[in-house]
Image (cartoon, rainbow, N blue to C red):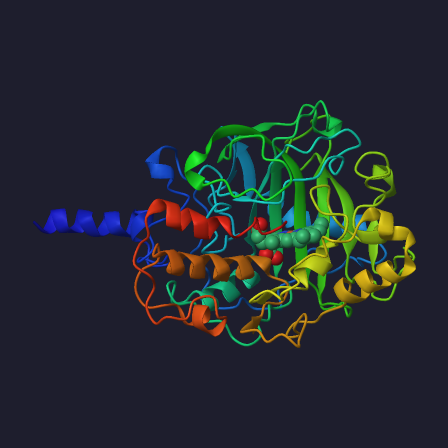
Length: 441
Ligand code: HEC
């Protein structure tokens, strides 16, 4: 009997379904896929304490204003030994000190099981290349390093009732890395020719660029290629925002490890260039070698808005920092992106000014985007935390999370009753889930 009991306890420690670092009264994870496929093993065992900030990071000796590509490569280097390709999947080495966010595994854009990818905005025609169409999907998985993950440890100390202070503040040396994959055809996006293929359990095509909202139970295994890798770093030398954000594109022909060795820096920014209406960008950099590869045609003259930084998968009306500076819960009523701006408005000085003045501010940690609309918490550029709150509160609303309503759902106004709903029938649940567009739209 004693031996049998020991086996049970060991199984509980090893089995992911029993891990106390995930919410036990939630059982509708989109990572499960009815047990049909193997599930990615990413870390959510966040460090319990913030690491000692004295440790020197390899990017700290590089001046990002003067040597942006070197800075980016130094940041990427800290991920290179942690990830590899195995069996058509991106996996960790098992020793990686990179962690995913809780609560992104719910709803129509919730994590798929094979690589833990969440659904992103579908690019418009000619976003990815001069010849790309608009029927493609983009799926992504993002990680925080130890200093960042320690903040997640504080927030998710109680996984079913996370605690959000009025202002989240990530420590210096926080870094995040995000891998974005697409099913776009390499015939149209020629820099992807020869790219390794990955399997993911995703939506049927075509999806188009409009509102998607495919129910998670219509997914199947499809082929993706790595398109873009995003990085973000909390760096005190960025007096503008406290952050440095940049992105790489996978550019063939394949070489070396065919993962990191093919990544070419696209753009980097440490500020949004507020008040700059004519494209004279001083708080960012775009790689001139990628003209006519990732930008430089009528529909995509620049990567982000008027020369600000963004990646191929991103909307030209925005920049990395404009979207991420809007991280707060709940979101401001105008959202993350001024999607109403038309490219033909670029010649209209008043419209350009209004767009820049609204979206391209330099927000600091603790500062709220659109401060006249109250929020429960300012999220210091973490849109994963923002998505985590809204998905968890949705799960409470549909009854897929049971028990007491998480405090943050009440303080944000997402769901006000003291106890989460009783589980709903499938069509009512889907109606609620369909109301929410993919997060990066
Ligand atoms: C239109 C809005 C938008 C733009 C533009 C954007 N992002 Fe994000 N980003 C998001 C959202 C939403 C998430 C969280 C959900 C997810 O991971 O898919 C996210 C997540 C991330 C993460 C994971 C950590 C975090 O902050 O949540 C990183 C790193 C990141 N983005 C970097 C970038 C970089 C670099 C750029 C520019 C090249 C960029 N992003 C442009 C919306 C945007």
